[in-house]
Length: 229
Length: 229
DNA sequence: GCCGCAAAGATCGCATTCAATTTTGCCTTG
DNA sequence: CAAGGCAAAATTGAATGCGATCTTTGCGGC
Image (cartoon, rainbow over all chains, first blue to last red; front, side, top):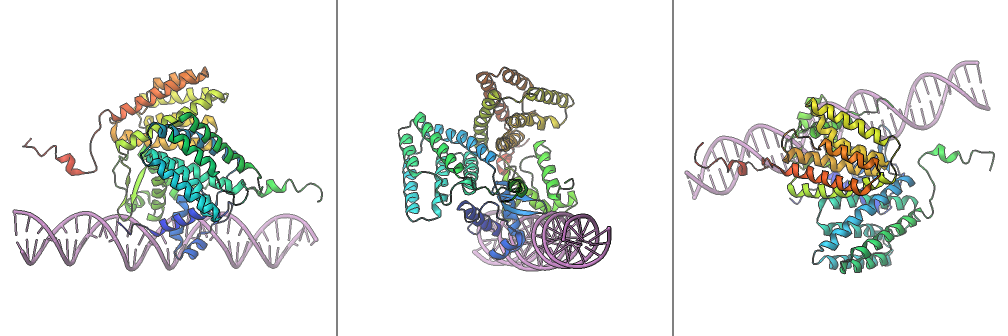
């Protein structure tokens, strides 16, 4: 039961981390050969990993044209955050109804780790900020909810990589701390309010300075093709 | 752009339909060879399709032990329906805020088709019942919401295949009609109430007569090993 | 008669190989 | 010199072969 890690699992995990930590930026092409070479395996394994990342929405695969790190549009970004608010409200509600006994401790220690990573300017901080929300979902005990939250959180990270300012942590740690306080008091109203505010803040941070290198070249260049300059 | 159907796409679609229409029952083993043979392709394509179905939660893949149609547990079933209520409430809210102009027509004509399939006792009716809810999600215009609803609806179908009575349509058509009425009146309260009732009804129908053919044969046979007969 | 072990069979993970499609560069032609 | 077309390179889609792992089954010892 220990060696149940297939190679494509390893590649999947590595690629995923690389994308979530913004080492691989949106739009980066991911040829199967290169991936296979760099990981020392064949294309088959790389392909398998890419297929799974695609159904996570982290990469886009176009037939006969290869895979690339997904480039969410602003429209998709709004969809993600809207749905994320819906799902995280559900998390909050459930946690206020029933919080595991050492749940608060787990949250606190996670935030501590976030602070450490942030002070060290580690790229881990980007991923840890997202994982705070996944930890919240885990405390509900619902496998499915964890799955879904993971999906929207991953996509949020991608959106921040695409639009947000470089190396900005996704979440303000202060807001995480406030949220923990509200949860400790089992106050669903306050907690929901903080969460909504928090997610809106993240969304604003994301849309702050849209570094526009759109997915479609023609669309971009159409703005540059009038006259000279 | 027409021949953009790769073979694994075709297999993926076929398997998915077969599962959702309950032709392939939960627990059925899906060896790569057999699938490749029956579809006239190699294991590679079959494998690719299976991986995608796995991330949809429709099949389970265990390393070195093969793939099989997923067998959701009762616990997972409750998670699915809980989350589904959360998501479908969101759909209802959005539709009451903004319903596309020919949305009602689309819903009505879909229900008509459901009725036709049901009268014909076609296995399509099972799938159509689920697709009513997907159509609702489509009317919101949010790709992501469509995705997520599709996931929970698919899993619901699987749950009904696993626990529900054979060939029962997933949804009562009457309830669909009532829901359309509430939506026509843009009444979010009534619509939500109907939807909640509807989903609870589906859930009850699912758990009605748990035909226990557990994954473990011994458990089943234990009921047959007392005395003779 | 029961338990453990080893060989056989089945199935999968992965690599290699072949085929199809897209892209790119070059050449011809008007 | 620009435009169109053709061929070569690159990249993916799919197939096949081999080794590894798990399951099953049959045998022998206790």
